[in-house]
Amino acid sequence: MKHLLIISDGRKGHENQSIALAKYLGMPYDVVKIDLAFVGSKLLGYAADKLNLYLKNFVVEHDIPQNSYSAVIGTGSSTYYAVKYLAKMYGAKSVTTMLPRGYRYDFDIIFAQSHDNPPKQENIIEIPANFAYVEPQGVYNAYGPSVGIVIGGDNGVFSFDVKQLRTQLDRIVSLFSGYEIAVTTSPRTSKEVEELVASYGFDYAVIYSQRPVNPIPDFLAQCERVFITADSTSMISEAVSFGKAGVEVLPLQSSKENKFDRFIAHLEREGYLHRFDGTVKEANRKIDFHDYVKGVSL
Image 1 (cartoon, rainbow, N blue to C red):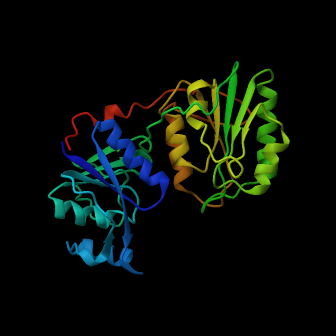
Image 2: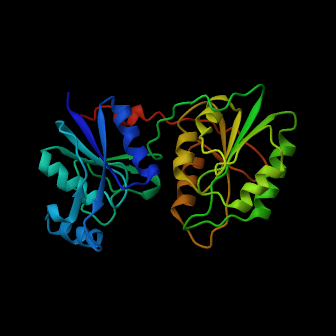
């Protein structure tokens, strides 16, 4: 049986999207880290793609298994040149799970998120969120009606305001008196925010810097509602595609228009989530990514 070759840029959020696609397709896959060969390779890759030039000396291949590949999949701008180069080398299809801005849109298949307003082309399949494949791990077990809270961290768009987060947490505690409240931080959570979370004495709390486990799939499987900070499209995509929990997104402050706000606004319009404003709403519509891979042959 032919395999899928997944190109990783080392970012788990990107790699997991490609793996999720492979799982929805029900196909075996290999994940290979590909490095850019030298400083400037990424920039030159954009130019070379415009000229339809795919050169081995732009990428460094690391121990690609000796399997037969039907498709090469990449997520993230650092993977796209390698996807096209290796697809040509293996006589395989080239696939991306995000709109490959800056490159020619001539990949065999492009899965593009709706909030990116992708062009209408036969090779572009529009999807409402990032591919996510969620599997509970048994890290968290609820003992009664429960609410989950998932807290991320600063990124290039958002900086966490501890005062704002405290106000949001206080309101959640007030709204869900009598519920078991389970909280997790993430690898990007600051020490200041971790200390704030620890100060509440929640029924269940993962402080990631002290205990690096991921209870989010278990929250989604067991909690009545899950609150998620707005800084991670990956975490939000998981929440709107698995379980029965209503999804509330905790807004963060940003000085400029950004992809996160566009992403969240689109999903809210479609009924997949609600932006928390001190009140909660019934927003538990779920995406079934199987619907978007029907008829896709790799």
